[in-house]
Image (cartoon, rainbow, N blue to C red):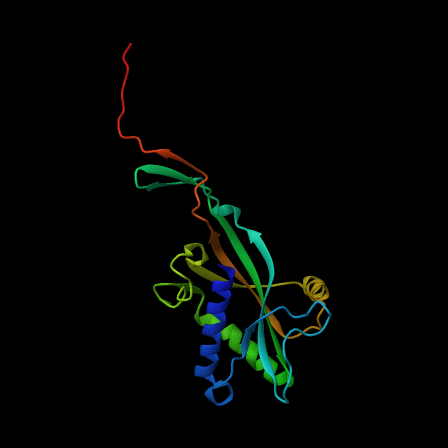
Length: 203
């Protein structure tokens, strides 16, 4: 599900950039999904070329959404009842960092990111039928129901700790909170035959 959400958002943001600035971004994939640093402490995104510009999507934190907690699910399959564990509801914090050889270009790209999410604050299949287009029919647990996206503000201290943990030099960035993604595998926890008859014994 995380991959589904990230790939969808990156494709939509790339399309938005091409619409807004076809001269500069008409044939390029600016948005990439990547960590910032490799295990050997080198920058994870290719910087070859004299005019490289990238918007890098990086997952930086997950939190369980306790408010959306639910009970066991019951579903009927043929003539039996299956009990399925309740979904795990997750909020994902995503770092949009901008790398560019020209600092002014980096600021312009960051502005496009903010504008994109100002226009699109939620993503569902009704408005975006391509949301789950890449999910195979036999893997329904990879589908995204609806994404709600909000800008997350971090203090200077939190920013400092984040970039130290990432092991990267500070870049222009914005953090967005993706909520709520429900992870559920419909493999049954238990099953029982359906109740087809009720008998009352009157003593």
